[in-house]
Length: 491
Ligand SMILES: *Cc1c(COP(=O)(O)O)cnc(C)c1O
Image 1 (spheres, rainbow, N blue to C red):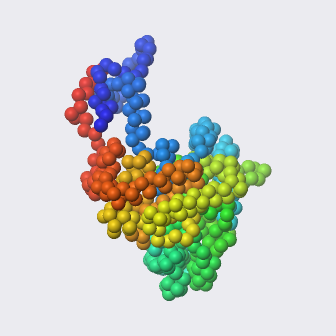
Image 2: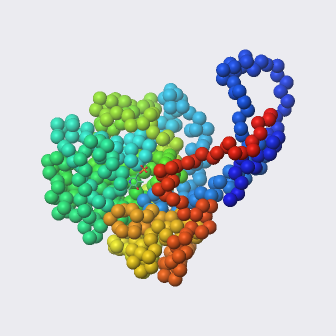
Image 3: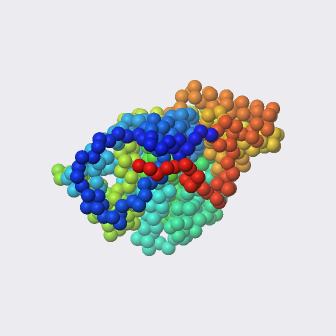
């Protein structure tokens, strides 16, 4: 283990040079005594180069997509073009304030107006809100809109139905809105079982939530039938469109029978994400639901320009975030859309799908793939062969991948596949990268046969070995104990 920054402390060493102060001032006039420090903070005394090395080294202990392949299923850890970051960092966007007069931020309003319009357009909806700041918050917003729709019609609805292949946030969001959740089993193809659906649909049904493609990476092919069944009882169809990178430019959910859908702009539309943020969970809706969208919306493109519109406040579900959501994530999404255009979006989806299918076909001889008809942007393999034949678990396989320089895939999810290994290559990886990963997975399958102990012991060459996950959660300790550090506090 290399030294911590505190251990590199050397009294008197510093990383700055300031000219001598020649201003005559009295400290007490500038800062009232009660706000002054009593003692010098115990910071390490190090050079600028020490600081640079410290942070560069820390950054490399983590995995990131610029360092290596990141096949984390359902997370879309793709490469996001740096031009979006560069443009979002422009002071004209970065340094504006949400309370500025509208006439001084016309460009920012235009960006959001166009993004609302373009998101709605590419998915077949009437309009979209940019306010929710995460996929899960988009779901919450969408279900609130469904609730408002039923309330306005005097419907007394109690339940939301979803399949067991739904993303975990779906039932959580519906429950948060007070609905009772009815989960139905998938059929042997990993899709919604229509007979099981018919059995539970009734007058209480407020809506149906479908993750599409579902968490098995499969496109639900019976959406028209499902939506007929749901609409027949005046239920609404919600699509979890977090993984729109498999569909964009190819299909419009609003034309397939969906009434409400959220996007994960941070996944599909180019914002580096992970570790909890930042995100944007924009929500698109059909025409008669627009009046329920959170306020304000961005309106305009008139002679008077663009403005914040709260004229639907009386019918709106209210605000779900301060101001207009995560503006910078929305800016990146707008740039991404402008750069790619319709044809580009279509190629994104085609590449996401072909990459996942290529991996699935190359690996299915070595790892069990339970639902192995063609997949969309991801597929779910299983470590069940390795477990039965070699006593190796999916966790061991994932840990061994760390040794080989990869981020581990999503494991043990979805719950309907035992020893699940959920792999999403994303559209930004080349065939060469995929081939290297395939070879690594094949090597690991061979190790499971010939040297299973190495998998039980993995990871062998990461900064820390196998962490005790349970202890890490129950006794989380992220504090470095300064007390034992030889930090002097001289000036
Ligand atoms: C990531 C994801 C979500 C949740 O999005 P967050 O931004 O993490 O809240 C919901 N559904 C699906 C299918 C996802 O992949």
